[in-house]
Length: 406
Image (cartoon, rainbow, N blue to C red):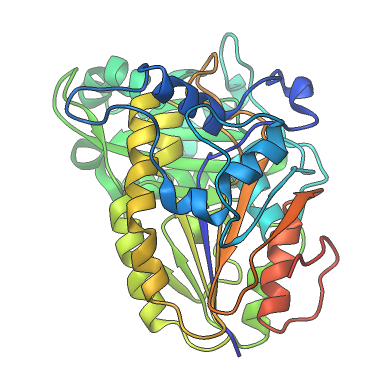
């Protein structure tokens, strides 16, 4: 029996989504635009990186071929490489929305066929009755924010008032989400978590996908910094996912980073928290040692999205991609006969795009492992093909959505 390792490069889209125009994202291409900026010098930053984007290991696995299939264009600064050494392709999302739960659930074999609810972009984000209920249930003096905002910006702007008044900072984004930022010591981390649990119950009837705890530290404007103690409170997937199916079959599902939160802890029997791409990769590699036959290690590298995509930081995103690529051989050295590694993404977040929100894009699929025959798998019609391929690799019966490419 084999093992499987699924790593999501959060937000690493490769353009070409057939329905991008419906989301206002026609032309968005996270990988393509990062490559273009790096090739023209706009992706340089003193002391961080310079020159064309360098991701030789992912390119060898088929990333460049997949990007050209997905968007119809060769990423700037890259030549069409020799025949890839991995299984490569791309996939279009069929789920509604372009947020984290939708992408991950579809990867795990369950597309989202319903519409999430969203809070308004203009004016007050949250209706008065919801604000009143949050204040009463949380025993709060009130809330700050109540708007559509960038997390780092609103914390910097309202952090001092939050410390002075004890009012949590509440805001939303283009995702179906209610976010609560609070100081780890002045407000209290456990108190923040309890408040988010309360708000999760309050927004259930509104069909809101996630409530997110956003703890931070610092004492004055300009010094505030979000910590790694973020916690997501998601609604559970509408059907059993790949994780549930593995758990029911008696397999271990090791969730690294925010994976357990995304799936409302369903189907996960080993949770390993870590903050930042480097630590998440360290934890993933350790989990590879601990995984047994038939097990799945499922990781999310959140920095691509949280630190660089949303903040429209091209140089930071490029440097993070290069850092991840340099560590791919470490993963390869951990593989045993029969193992498979799948690298993919959950949506796009083009750092050259207007605004600060996710972008509707196709995602890359790169798979490798001992004995896995290199080949192209084309453009898949759903992310669910990824989950079904892992299910087939691990000997599970087919699910209701998607088809294995193995």
